[in-house]
Length: 76
Ligand SMILES: [Zn+2]
Image 1 (tube, protein in one colour):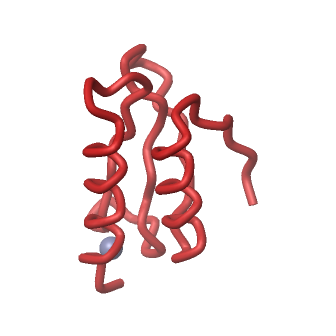
Image 2 (cartoon, rainbow, N blue to C red):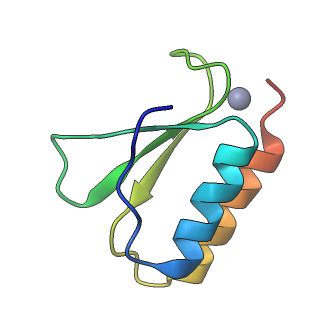
């Protein structure tokens, strides 16, 4: 497993852990300062699911739910 930074927001950190339990992996974005990173679905491919995680979304709980929904929708 690659190491990832903890997300500063608790709800989003929980959503990220949920994704990791489903086999998703963290990738740093690097070029974007607004994004905390990306989550790649278990397929880990260009045509797989990709979720950009913001570092400071306006409504963190909504973003956390968005992450969970994306994980639940993934069929890979
Ligand atoms: Zn997927």
